Length: 311
Image (cartoon, rainbow, N blue to C red; front, side):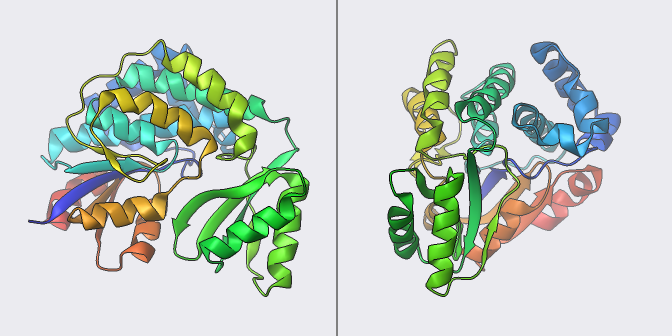
């Protein structure tokens, strides 16, 4: 019996206008954007529908914007298609969307938390002192060795294991630059700095993890109706008591996306439905599991064809 996973995008998938057509077409989507506006005390809907690319790229804006756009799609999918997931997962920020889908977090708590999470992550490291880079074609153990050599007392480490041959590193600007040079010296010439405002998922994020832990203490986690594959350990979690520790660990730990997809495949998942803006995760899943059936739903056309595509 083949199984289905809902997967939710993280930062980098945002774009101006996301969610607008959905909110114009479906009352349930419009109501969700209105709820986000009320919870946050500013017009997140306007930011998503008509904001500038620059404003959407600010981490404290990006995180609640992508979460809201993703959950709006989820609500419409649940209402219009009857599609259901056996497992859910999300990339970094997307894990919060997955937790809303599972019933563990209320949407209001999730959107409030990721707005703060974005601020905490931005403020953990002064702007310009940390960065991230995508390293292509380097094996995991080789890259870990390169990072150890490049550190020289500073922080640089793998931050995202995205797919075979695509690993992102994060750390201080100088240490990341040294890692790129060492990699090039060993023949790995495909490396590019990413346009991010902070070095996510590395030890420099510890102040953000501490502040997030304090905020999560104020939130209630509910029983889960579908297991969530956690970024920090790439294992399915159905225990509500583990949700907060896993979210705190995620801030400084690498995102184990490749391992998460392999876990889902081993559990019998053959169909992956990406809910929310962009097709980044669909591309990664295809590189990890070439046999996977992939569907992306982010707009009205996607909703209308979803039922046909997934049969």
